[in-house]
Image 1 (spheres, rainbow over the protein chains, first blue to last red):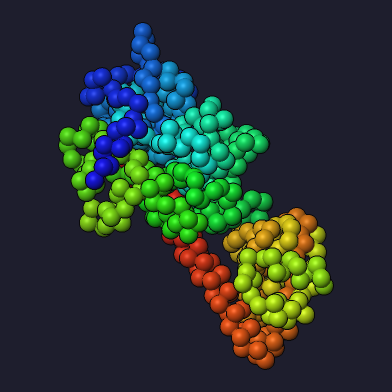
Image 2 (image 1 turned 60 degrees about the vertical axis):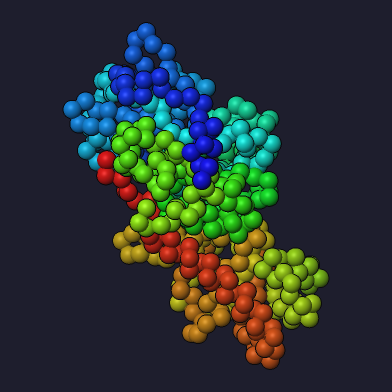
Length: 289
Length: 155
């Protein structure tokens, strides 16, 4: 299997001291939804930001509580402002929620493979995402927009549970206003005041304007959403080797040593989280893996 | 009528259908317009039509006491909605409301059921096409029921 080899090529660089935790300061906290917040962090005084590739993640350390892997959701062109969006669901993320502007948060990383933005040059790019899956894809959108002339059509299909669960609503509105980016948003359920789409995100794939024979599809969201998305991309004629998925597993060390995030013959923290679907197809739906 | 025939011929739902069958459909078809906010049908009413949306947007809703209308699906330009005309007791199960000015072609269900009884080849073609739509919507509904964006992590 060529997964690890190929994905390593996608990574621009890794941390010099991979287990070193650096104390970042929280500069800004933005509430995205009732349980999801975006944290903008500044590096320790005297040090610059760490560059990252779209799709990579950091281990965030709440002192005395523990670590959690969170994807980087900021602009890769602005590494001095490290941005993470976290849903508050467990002990560590609850610990993050208790922190205030100015407090310190430990960061080590970035780790993992990245979205294939170079391979996508000259092609249509379709991004299919649901829920908090938009966060790991946001750096790709920034990257594609900065390098807009290198790509064909760019289509973002985003699904959320309800209108209140949508992330980055201000940015989505701005992106929708652009002529060079096709943004389609849907929610699973809504009440009478909502005037947008109501459907699962997979229903947006069939009518979306992209060339299935020459596109790259980037898929990020809950695993079940990704499985159904792949089925619908396949129906449109997108080959498995042009579909990329971001896989979530129980990542601990971040460097492929501890084995907690093993996925078949790969480690998600090192060989993933972004995989070419054709490389992991046989193990993606195996319940035992 | 010529215009309706052309639109139906070009619609993906009827792709590959025999010319003679399209002509039979045209005999049951009419142009309809709904203003923004207008109800196209309401739950419990006789389901006597289905629609090809030419332009606009339609919300399929149900009313929950103490909560108000809840949107189940939205339907857009190029899509078809309404299949209760096809199965007894031929009653709408939900409300449908245009959210903007909506133009559609309505197919008279009673008329079409009669023609399908007379011409089973036509009936089979219609059934095959609606089976695909129903299967697609069943799958989408199952995904909606799974509430896939709920909390999955415990960290």
